[in-house]
Length: 229
Image 1 (cartoon, rainbow, N blue to C red):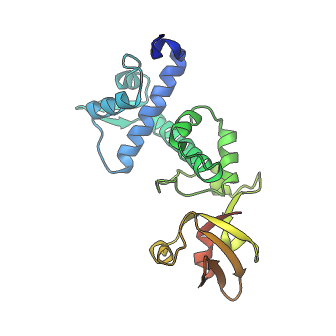
Image 2 (cartoon, helix red, strand yellow):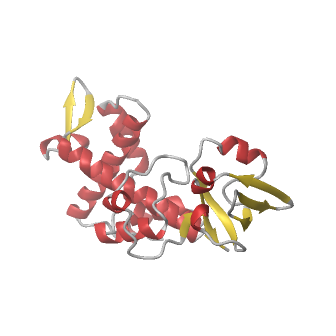
Image 3 (cartoon, one colour):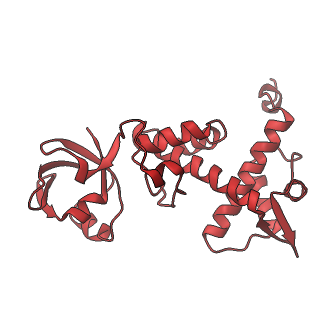
């Protein structure tokens, strides 16, 4: 039997190097997002757990390439590294939204890791617009904003939209919520994945969730993002 490592083609060195850098920058971004200071040892260990290649690129080489700084064993971004980390994190989390919410793939995380390396800035913006500029990934981590979010571009019709922009009489599935009332809404069954019907929009938004009818004001409705069933 041919060993697995021989049957699976290895990426070209430059591709392998870039993918390692992307993963390292994304991991460092997550450390800082959690308010944690990443050490060289922690970061390298985390990356080795994620990678099948044990003798490939290193975090030390990224310092030479101007992506990170290392001082007293602690790792931080350069400005160029931070911008690239922000972009790769945004692509990854948008991919998670696309695969989890729209394509309903159960193993979406692995596919998102592969997809993040392959899409162009144009495709990234099209996906973001298509999804309705989601603020968080399926794990409720923030998705860094892009130009399309700031300009509210509408290059394609969003598949996911605010309930406030939806039509009365239509049925939807809740994709995510962006409102301080998340806990209260969850208590009455209005959570991601719930199916709802919009009954009216004035003077308040009236929804039917299963057998329960609820009313919310416009500000709350703006924070409920849905897709048509």
